[in-house]
Length: 459
Ligand code: FCB
Image 1: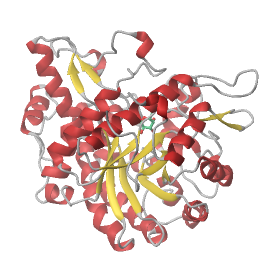
Image 2: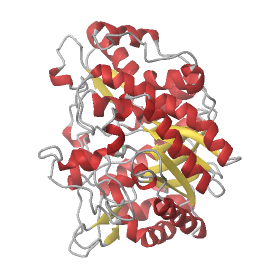
Image 3: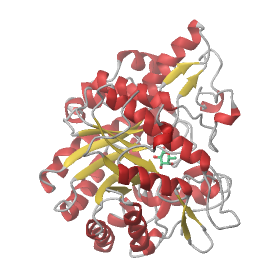
Image 4: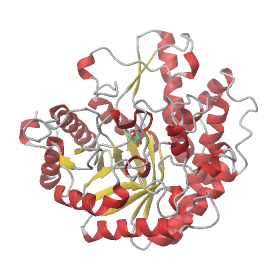
């Protein structure tokens, strides 16, 4: 039986992102982001909503800090809205935007909660998109302006920084599948964007270190265990390709300083690299490989992959949901905790990151308040326990896992799904902005305080 207790210095947190919770879209000089523009287009957000108000966290952050303090959390992962800091993407800094994060950081520290800001969680200023967005190499320089302005202001108090959240989603969902802002459907552009995202990460690391001496700097990637839909040779090959596209394309440059050869060849065969890899300039990979202090891992589910011989319809991914609907969350994602153990173990072996942190893990279930006003989200409780058990198994196997951030503190604007998917351990009534801690929130609080899983989980 694996140990039930977590290491003494294990960091317990929750995660959110600016666009999904802040609202206040036109307040204090904030400029428009690509997600504001994307959400305005009819039909792109499932429930027709937008994030102009969302959880109104911009105004209610003191209440949200108090909520986190009541749960006993050690840390809070949030993101910085680029369009608040540099409304035109680059150039003049909007001091009122920096002031907001300054207040947030001070409020967190006063409550004994460590701030873990992410510099980019998808809300690119529209002004930069108008010049090509992440497909334009100049956006790398603009990101460095952001990293510099934010770390110069907060660097004396922030001890953990994350450059990017899930560059795969930004590049592939946003530029190849077109299901995220900016909604492009061009694989070539997606690959160029991925390189610029990685380059901006590598270049930001020394800038942050200069402004925030002694701080730890990392990046967060989405990872999945990729498994073939059948034992066929074709499915096996496709699985290696998908693992390459999703996991190795991002982690190999960061840790090994190269793009994986088999994935380059695969993209080439698919006609996605019409000009080869000429967007990679001499020296880029050395910069991307700048050593970092920790790897942030976002894990939700595994990816079951079917053969590429089935043509990709409209650039859709080849992953398929698995069999038992009882095991699917409201996102249609399979509950698969063993994949988390195996993914952590594999990344630890392949890349030797030194320190790893689960920067997101959680589940969407719509469970609403019952007649007594409480939210009995039993399935989220089960998801949480099984995935924390999976973390313990990884630690037991020697993985240097140092923290866990649950996604998410609040029900929020779930990108193209709008408010239709609820990931929070705190229920949000979007009419009144009332917050109710769900059963999963109470459970998490107990786990955090005890630093171990409840007894009944012991196997
Ligand atoms: C992740 C995103 C996060 C949230 C969760 C459900 O990919 O980083 O913003 O949408 O999925």
